[in-house]
Picture 1 (tube, rainbow, N blue to C red):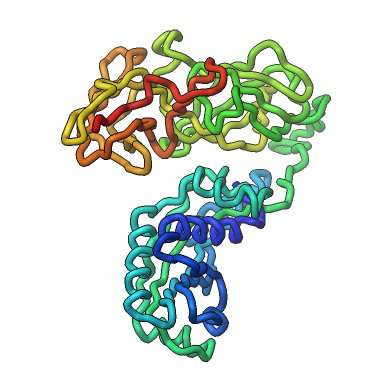
Picture 2 (tube, rainbow, N blue to C red; picture 1 turned 60 degrees about the vertical axis):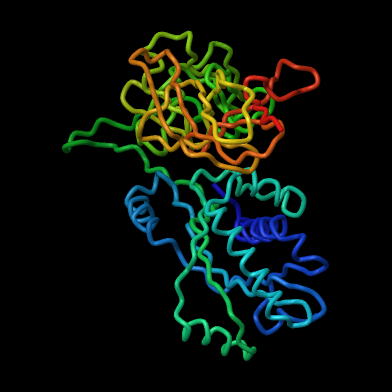
Length: 413
């Protein structure tokens, strides 16, 4: 889920998010992450200071840690953290008017980006923290205002012996750091009900997963893709690839393709051409992937890896609209269920779903309707986000790569 760089990756992503949103108003100023007593050293420019003042374990994950403590073979649960930041704005030449304008802009940005997306995290950390894998975390990272009374904020400033300034507190949750300890495995039981039966020994080592390789270096898989699982001891017999849907809680299984080696096996995801019974339970969204080894009298499950399964946009109607209000109809596969979260992304705007229609034939696509308004003229690449996973708007058959024509929309001027 995440390595020890996760905390630094969150701070770096917030820094990047704020800078991209206010760089024009910030001017020659800076965005810092300093303690309150050292934050303001140059009064000649605007400044945004993002101070990490507190870290605590996430309460919702305590039950998970408790359960794993009873089953050590499951491995130690990841360290789940909530990060608390204090946001302070300084105006150029100590101008309160400029600081208030900049404060409003920053608050607006954090309000509109209440969830840090995988793309934002990866873009912010790829140069400064290339070894960070926070963008691969399955659990969403949310930004929420933290209510602190005036006295509580004042105590923070007094603790640093710094002059009080208007500040806003935020909580970033949840940030996961994996344990480096290996799972424990109990020895075989030598007797049952007082009858000694002896230990059962199976030849060969248990499989282990190390990574997932998707076609075209995609960030997420598409239905019908053949995905490769890399690891060790993957040429065992009676293997099954298991997909656990994070949001829905159900588990689906697929048989690997015959081309297995010791270090790699492949599996093909279902497609619209498959029988309805083969795809009925598959939804777009996030999954945890593992391999199950079936023995005559026991079952072994490998470690889990995250997998994002993207919806596929089939058509957009119309593909040219005026800048005023208009209705956009989109078809996609797999079918969208009413309980799933759906949003249409056009540029940097998110558009809520207006209507959903899914036929009883599970191999048929869903039809989605969106209401567009106040769109600026231009050519837009359209993406459909379902349960946090975006459709892939790239035509991989084109050379050089281009955006898929069926996922573009032109707003006339």
